Length: 377
Image (cartoon, one colour):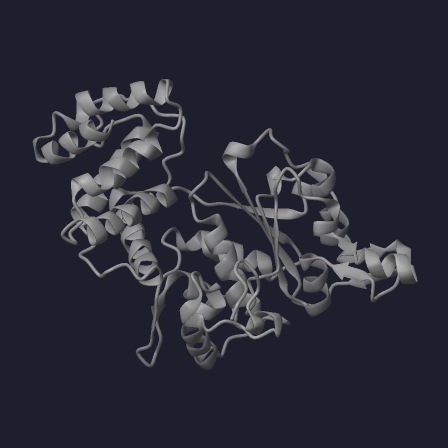
């Protein structure tokens, strides 16, 4: 019997859990069939160390139909040229920086790029205010270090060191949240493609196929801004918010359907009408203007991103499935919307109440939504 709160015996033995028990499979696991299908039909030139050609990687991201009728589902909905630039960057000796406001799918794109290029999206460094230099370079097994002194056996490689040794893609999330001195440890790695290990009098040289994909969001500018030396080592691709309401509704509906299957929520109608309503509210408040362009609005302190819209709708589906009749309604999304908008109880509540009374109340077809929001506001 497995110990409570501990590792199961199969985990300790190194056995991977079955895919149907994993809450969120990695991209290369979830879309293994599509990656295999693309590899089978991919006859274009591939950069050294890549599993697929740049054309096939872009097709994997944006979706498409193969000559034999096979369908590749889109992972990213947005300008094709942006993804072509991102993929082309990875085929050069430059690293890739995905920049944008929170919720523009930077992490999602990073993961799928790594999965398609090298078949492994798990070589990840998560940037935080407490990220240490060892997370980027390497650390030590201190028991062995004290017993034996510096040695190859005592060294603990970071995900970046492993990626260099194996010619893989390393991912660095939230780069601008990392302290500046930790960020700058990347400079030698990105410019010289080598990682010195002075304690051993050695170095690790990157194999062909090695590259780095980093993400950073616009709201973090000024927290730990990148030095000019480090920024020059990256090609930057800015991921925009969805261009239109229809595009954002499509993104939210697709992602909610995927999450619903993963979370095993009782299958219920997605409620496109309610999804459109959530997306409209978020777009109007973050732009400071109603969809018809007639009324200026105050914007709340939060980002109200597409990712938050997905969260609101997914939570609403759970409420509808477990506590309602299975159909997504205004009451199911109202609480989630209020929670997403009112981040600052003082200023955001004023913004929300003004939006309710001047915009939502005046839309006759939104009366049920107005009443539901008033009940939870």
